[in-house]
Length: 81
Image 1 (cartoon, helix red, strand yellow):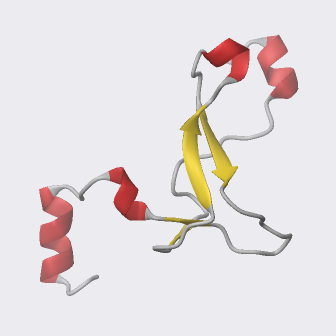
Image 2 (cartoon, one colour; image 1 turned 90 degrees about the vertical axis):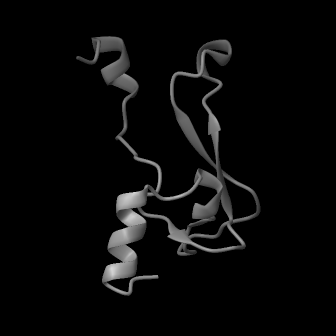
Image 3 (cartoon, helix red, strand yellow; image 1 turned 60 degrees about the vertical axis):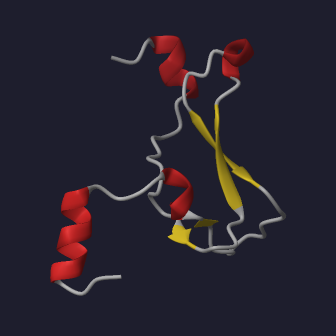
């Protein structure tokens, strides 16, 4: 449950990868939140170059490790790349 003081500054929830497309030349990167003096209470999405209004947000999905075996098998079975 969100405390009242947290709710007053809460503006939404974001999940890594949600709303981002893959590119080998990303314009964003994730970093541990430095809020509260570096307590790492979450994840910040940070621009690594200028992003203008209307620009698409990109992440290099390869930075997040390899897919689980079941997903690789599914992709192979259904010819998904």
